[in-house]
Length: 368
Ligand code: SF4
Image (cartoon, rainbow, N blue to C red):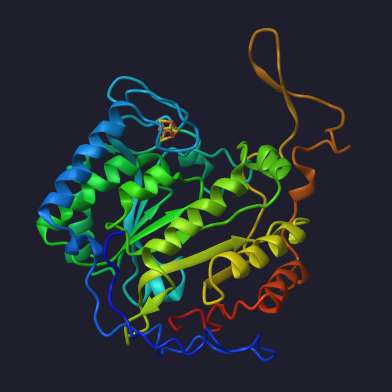
């Protein structure tokens, strides 16, 4: 295990009985950092060189995510559609993240094109399900991190959906380190990672920002187009927690290291959300910082007219009913989530002992 950032060692919460009244996640030990140095700055030259070699080896035979394509990414594309360079759609300060990440200056977000999942409700499907953006070498990508720091004055580099470009991310961070990068790296993932890719990232990521999407295998097959999603997510989140621990802040209220877990509540899938938060409390940490999200809206394939492929290979709309009896695709999630569904997941989280639940600032501004 590579080094973790130092923090206060007194844990005032671990031995308390289950809470009846909600506690607040105020800035206090043990979640207040005395000082912060990014993990990548603590790597030795030997460790960095070993990581570079491993990253290049993975690019030549990529089995780095659960899709196990085994392709040479200098010559071929796998399920994620991306070769040895990354394709980036947007790099900019972003103000749509949690307050402790965006702060006053924004989170330095890098939106990668391509993905190893195919969520039918994807909020960014125009960039995730097809290549849509500009190509960058890992070194050029690292130079952008430094521009975000120097010009954008952002609080962190936020790698959005990076599971399929982990070798390039490793090379980019090591390059940026040499150029003077000193802000935290956020790994903003859909949790379809692998232990191999997380091992490669160990020592380079300060904040893991995983979205645990669903619990049942039948749901992940239908809505994410992935087998075994929850099993993969469970082992990934444990590995992330082992690397960086619970979310910690500096006195300015900005998150600097640890895990911030998201769960987007889906309409009609509240029960799966309950399973997820209970499992997290029992198996990861009761001090896990959790954001139960309510902003689901039908997107991508959800609510579209059903289509079929004709003899000539063209897709056309068809009359008739879907397998659930409706005329539109994925009817069961073709509505916004209800507040009582979101509240049901939050209540289950608190009953399970999770207490660091993120509340959005009522004024829409920056608070913790
Ligand atoms: S990262 Fe891409 S090429 Fe590699 S195994 Fe996953 S989907 Fe396949």
